[in-house]
Amino acid sequence: MRILATAILSLALGGLASASDTDTFAVQGTDPDGSAYTGTVTLTELHLDRQIAGDVFDVVWDVGGQKIVGVGIVDGANRNVLAVAYDFQGAPGVAIMTQDGETAKGVWYVKGAPGAGTEIWTPRENPEPPAAAAIEITYDRAVTCAAATSFVTGMLRATPGADAAAIQAYDAANSAWIVKLGEVGKDKAMSARIADIRARQQEWAADPDGLAKATPIADDCVMSAPPM
View 1 (cartoon, rainbow, N blue to C red):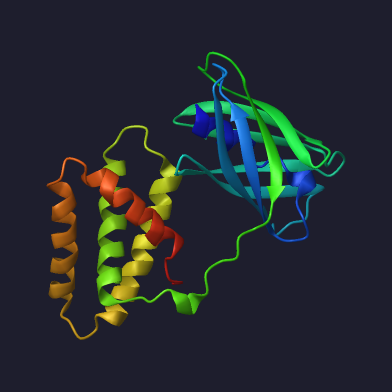
View 2: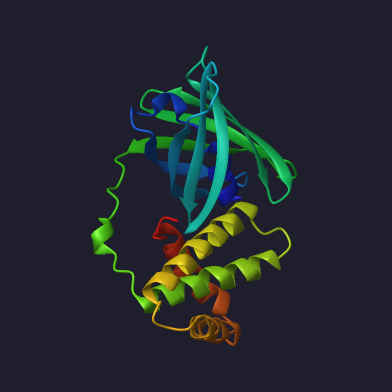
């Protein structure tokens, strides 16, 4: 339930968001059984084609190294309250977050849970992204990222109840790395590039812990995927 708690409350600081389109918050929460957890949430304002009386947000939260995406809305008439509707592994849920000074506090519930959870958001400085020049895209890195994102995507698609948003993120990153591989590996035949990708995937497939080893690599490749 820890990931769920963060997911449904990740948009709770709409009234606290700064002038920047993206803000990051530290998270402290409790599950229905009273156990505590911590994490971070990044809130990004969505710019709609049609103006509305309020604001809508996209969010990526991180709890225990797992990332999930959510969406919420702040009414223009009451900017201190954020309402969130979400789906967690096929179960509907709802959350209400209210601004409380420099933080936001709220409650959440997902259908089937034994009770409600709570969460507190505290603004934190957004980390500066690494300079593009600091990330060297080599042939080996492109092969590794193309292999890892494809491998994890395939494993998740074969897993009932897997997070659709995560699959979409891995799939999009895989497309970007395939394109980049064609650029940095243009001196190699396509068949050779495909063979290199499959060789990496076969290593993970033959390892009982292959998915656990490939996932953090794929996550890093999602975060550093080159633009399409």
